[in-house]
Length: 340
Image: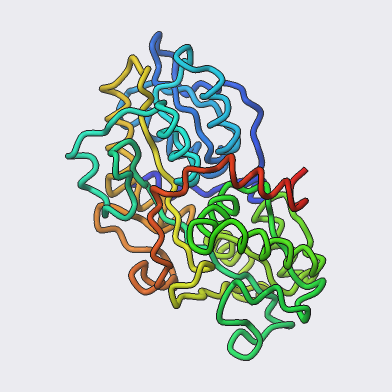
């Protein structure tokens, strides 16, 4: 697994782009492990190839957005060839669980991760954590003086024309779902409409949002923490953007988990479990820490660089099991005009 730590990610601008729904083989076994991944190939393909090399288990991967993968699985039903689903947020995993697509995981797997980052019904488990942050341009913003105490305060007209977001992104949709859980649908709709009234600039993903902040096209944006860390590694400390961790139990301080589950219809349970175990072992957790710059959730691995500790982030008290209403969130985003 030491090789994992030396693999550098390529094509940074494609981090959350949707890869065409084509099966990409990492092996030639007659009965490979079939993984449907809502995590992009540029993030996880090196890790999956390492899994194949380390275990001898051949693997096929179908890439897409997390919401797209969830929709595909629901359409395929019990005819799906998938064994494992690997998604970027608990909302899509919860939606699949609610529809009866996933099966329970064994306790010896579940016990490797804090209960906050796994399903109460035992049907999915977090593999890495991603904190929601406000990305800001370092020339335009003094975080101590300029940034509000709550994500909710960005509806103030003084932020008109200064904000960026990425409504198609699964983590953004999970954040909106959590907001609905915390403050209700009506208040969430009011917040979304307030941000839209401030002429928010829409981007296709978090990568482009962070890039726009660094270039000064926007002053602030709503993103996951790890994109900045990757840019800093590539561009150096002179990069023109930084993360602001809101904390204070605010909705904007949500900590999400990328996670994995096994399909009820899987005919490859043994290798599916081995795959999940592998993702929770020290080598893979170090990969998430050092390469994707996410928060490791298992094996005692520490986050990389100067990231604040997971324990210090002070996220809102939201049960990630309650983020399953992805359809309701998408409908709300469409209703207010944030999505087509």
